[in-house]
Length: 515
Image 1 (tube, rainbow, N blue to C red):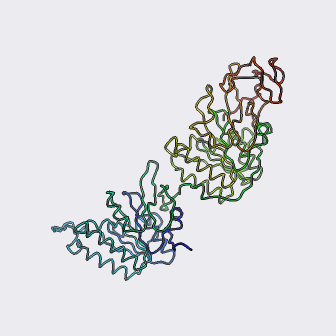
Image 2: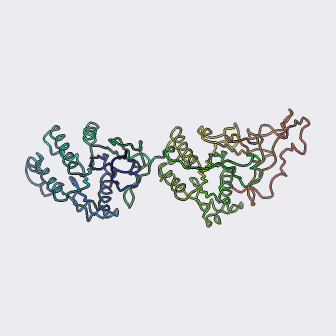
Image 3: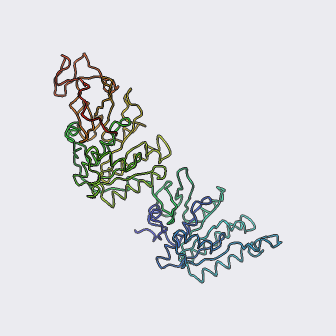
């Protein structure tokens, strides 16, 4: 059985929230404070009808239609085919010494307004009607009962004429909003949140919709709505393969590489090499013709490209080939919904198969929060990517350079299918680096730590550091007890050629470039 016929709201994201648009020949309310975009939403609704060769009627209770049209043109709306019914108060009537001040008695009692609306409807035969704001009738009715009767009668009259009706409400009182909700088939709320505007559907009679608050943005082109990411609403057929990192020793550490359609968290303190490691993985994917994109939350694109090229990662060449993209993201200007929309466009329209989020600390700024909200957003993003067959890498910046070992910040380890960590070591008064794998859900991995370095020709991973203890504290020492040998033997004789200590002479010829 098919669902009701629907009308587009003129806003693609809002249509997605509503499951395709408004079911036709019903009445809907959009409520919110001043400046939240109610009138602009109504203009989108009406112009979408005009584009579909439908008749559109704008009933203006507050603003003069000429002012409305001028404002609409600034946002790119063509209102030439929209019929305006001007019921706004006339400024000249403010000077009249009359107990009704602006409106004549017959208007206050509703008969004048009702006649003018009926005349406009009979003349234009509208398919779509927008009333802005319907709550203005409250000031014209003699009492609350009469107001409710007039609103109910007006809505019923318009829908009986086969019109789909959208009306705005400025009701600040919760009881008033609920009164109007009972009279309509659907209700939307627009609000000003800490990090921008949101829109939420609170009622849609006889139809499902995407619940929760979604990001609403007003720009020079009107309104855009970015839906909250619902991972289980997306899926596509994909196979699982093992992806080489492009570094032989790192592949050994991971027993072949990382599996596709998984989430890898790379954690470590600032400057240790997390971004370069993630970029190496993205480059390896791009070279294997699996398109990759890196989202930079914490540095500029120019800095990233220059630094990557200096260690042998051919970012610009792969971008020219179309297999790699680098996107700079300003977290204070982008909500999680907007960012998820960008990721979805990359995955669904450009067939991107590898995504790097650099990093979680910057992404946290877009949420304006910690804890549960951050984990919820990352969980939704990671689950969506896996269901779409995309391999993801999240970069997690740790505060401590040395000291007690923590695998991730903010209890993020459960999000990771693979957990790769980088660690500073203090040896002979110098800072060195080690790399290890703490977790790999889809297969086995090497449980030793290896020395890690970045040179002008890329990432270098050394032999297992099997002769040291206390590496995770950042101050390793030789152990007197037997040292575990990954080849299956025990060594009790102290340092040997295989279990060799880290000497200052082991440093690479050139210092590690910054992360």
